[in-house]
Image (cartoon, rainbow, N blue to C red):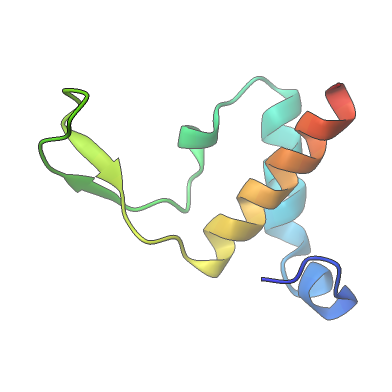
Length: 72
């Protein structure tokens, strides 16, 4: 998704802001409420992995990333 595009940022403002706030509150990327988890065996021994990301999940992650860049 193109987050430099105003219409994209406008359409997903709620998710972007939620991701930004989540990062400022110390939440991890894996705390993204829009992720779909798939139960499986993984190489690192975990019992789940994230499934394909929805547009809302991408927007939340983008907001998290923006806050992370601002914290540096």
